[in-house]
Length: 447
Image (cartoon, rainbow, N blue to C red):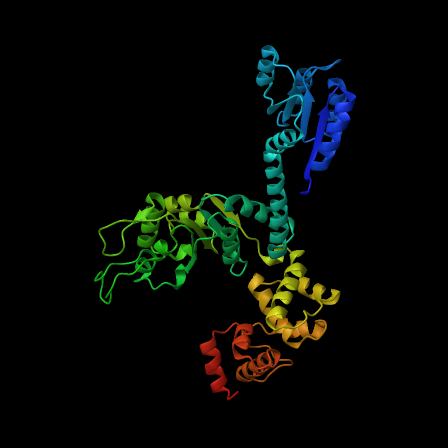
């Protein structure tokens, strides 16, 4: 037999034999079944137990099914009520319709039909429950990824709500707080998750080519445009376009973004035929965009078009209770890359992390954890953590104090190679270097 549906059913029937027999059948299909001999008992049980659904005979002594339905409606308008009857009295049926009963099942009762009718009527309840379970699991998962502090719980709540919409979103916060990471999570929770997430750092676009990168160009649009090229807006069609450092966009690019967002179409550079797109826009800035707009350095109309919701990510120093959680998450991730057991983070190390001001926010914490894992055995000692905290420059992961920066870099590469058993690509990733730069450093230091 299939698993029981997780529902509490109240069955009200004045005939004792029928009440017992149908009750046994219902217990085979639903997790809990309550029984009452008349409407008065049914109302008392309903008020005390709050069942998910009521099944009741219509004609009963003391209080009939219609009066019971009226009482249930007053206490819980959303609870489905199913009436059973052998009679076809039109007045009764019209009154039941007026009360909004979910269904009728004729007597003599067909048990299969009754179970199927209950299951259909309860479908919205089961769907709401499943959505709530998914939401709770999602929230727990996001808490592990983002943090459990009250301020981050509010961020998670906002992220869950905005993810299910097509609204534009601005994410603000200091450098390194995880703005791009939050944008990825929101896209991953959205109905657009099967479509592209296209990320562009506006500050990294050459000013002369920014418009072409975003909106594409036709052949011959400018010197060097030997062929047509799609822009990032078109690449993101059906998905999400994440514009990081949006405050760095020039006035001309801001104007074109505004037009594309409002009209859902744009002209490629040099083109005459509009390109239509369906794109959800998420933007990020380490500045207060509203203040930038008020000062005239960012278009105010564009700000309001992009900011259906603004989420501000707090700096790590303002969410101290999240530091151990995030540090352990980074440790587990880094240890998995290195194919080793994650080292423990003892209380003295946690206290040391909490004392640090974290000017580089999450980016700095992850970098420190990478350096600490390089040296740690079963647990991260205070000395190892102090060394990792003291050497913030990329590659400065040496134990002790190397005399020169070059010695520090050479020692860092040796330790990264040792930690990854000589796997160069993994060592480069551990040091947060692209592979070509890492290879040049290997040649330079003859390693």
